[in-house]
Image (cartoon, rainbow, N blue to C red):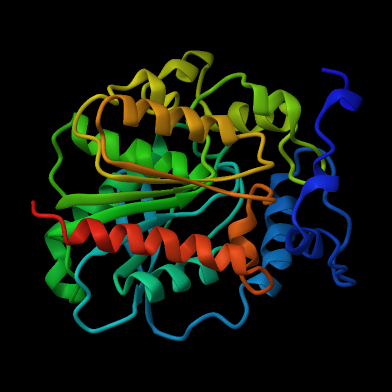
Length: 323
């Protein structure tokens, strides 16, 4: 599609989203050119420091566990002494960026609003670690806490997965991995998915939207995919293209959130419509005027804070549902 035929996204986003887009940061250098992932990760950490400030205070602990792939870092957020459940959070960043610090405020707010323990998993990044390593690390972490919950004073009888963008794919993929392999890590009460990609190779939204403002041009998306996948055939894996998995049965309740001007919105729409068509419990909410990654900007945007509250309240509601 010719660029001039695409939707003029920056003219249509909401006023609060425009405030974020136009917020000037004197401390930021230009985005590193090319595929220098080390430099891009350093930039991303620095850029997100501002947006992670002034988050709720609560007890946090850092820990490291051994997996077959090596050590994995975690951060445990405890909003109260006896939390009713544990949420595992997977950060976004296109599989190549991000860590526990870049998403710290998101996890603190989710713990605060849900009043559940949140465990952020610092899974290994691509291209150094390729599919399905991140999923295998996440599952290993869940198994570890299932067997050692008493040592950390957490409740894992009921658990959930949550994530944004690439982290949303990892959240749902890990859930399906546990189901398909019959791995018991506690009842998965809910899955919270903010503007994820779930395996579409093409869509109307991918053609009509995406640009330098969100880093989600068709070329960008292809780069993320090439960095993450081990081989071309992985595009069809039921743990990458999740629509190739069985979504007709035993999918935990899903909160599916999207942004109006996100080129990945059709992934969320299709996931919701698929689950709904097969009577799987799910809720879909589109946030008008928003761009991809808006969850980061709760310091400045009420909509971002609302989206986290909506997911937290959905999860709380599932905990009240009989097993």
